[in-house]
Length: 534
Image (tube, rainbow, N blue to C red):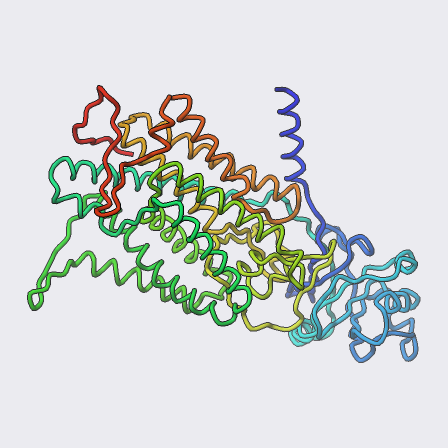
């Protein structure tokens, strides 16, 4: 036990350790004003200070009229002790650096109209360069020159960022909150349905309206096959289908948000005022909620590429979408849960780990579809990075992930906002099992909610393990690879230990014609209306 604790502590220390990235900050000032700009350097070649206070300050000299492949036309007295800005091109980075170094310069900035890439050179050239070297955007230098004029002072530094970013904690809270609330909602709805069915057939139809149940293994297989086909189509026809998915998401998320808010209003006991127009009755509360939900969805649709703040709306709509999906789609028994989750685990692993061997850019189909055409930028070769030198038109991305910006990657966010992401499927798929466990607790009248709480705990452990492996390996993980075994095995063990595996495996008595479901109440237990709340 003590050894396991030590290993865990070491893992936490490793994850919390700092990393040096290739993005850095150029701080320019003139005594009265200052501004920060994105630069890209090679930390293993010409390391920079980690803090602004420790960074050397040098006068910044404009030499963008030359590429500095040789010293012709440049006076050593003019550049000695200064940071030089020259244009990219005509010769290697190391050659420019050696020329600047020979002239007595203290640092070299290379202005680029092309993408900023991590500076590199032949192995024999690395030891020859002893001054800081970095690339900056040409347009940034022109903007700085216009803002500061003459007398610019430059400092270059590369603040490290923590591997264990607070955004991961926020993502963890979003995931567990959504799964728990979805399970609670399903359990409460099942209690209402049972109460309605025991009180009379009239209320059962209302409780079941809008709910779909997966009860056939064949239908599950067909569903997974359709998901595979859709993913492949998205990969090959992304630029066309992405707009269709965006429209569908706006409609579905607005509907889901309405359902969630309406349920909250009912829970709070908020009444509603109805009025009639031409023999049609309208609810004032429903109209107001519908207007709010449609407005939120439209705002997201219009500003979906504003990375700095739109992620808040996307996550809000995503939570509502996942909750409504878990409420609407129900798995009729544990057998269906095992088949569906197992197939989707294979689906996730195949499209994340196997497909990179078949794609041209070496990026998995899952990542390419989830992150859009720019996904190749997420794949780095060693420690190499590539940042656009000019403003790029925003690329459309599928609204299929929760996004939270990294809070400690200051230099990286200056070069382009970075996000921690979690796919909706990593919440919905295990969430369907959690919802089934919650309903099963209702069917057996379990006041301790043993199945629901056990499955939620397993999901929490699984998602923590997923993030831990991601941080330790430095690459994205198919979360279902960890979530599915944790949740399925835990649920099966609980059912086995309680001697209820047969009931748990078979679930409800399901009739295809009328989709009626009956509670599985053990002998000796009351079948009176259940009033316990989640």
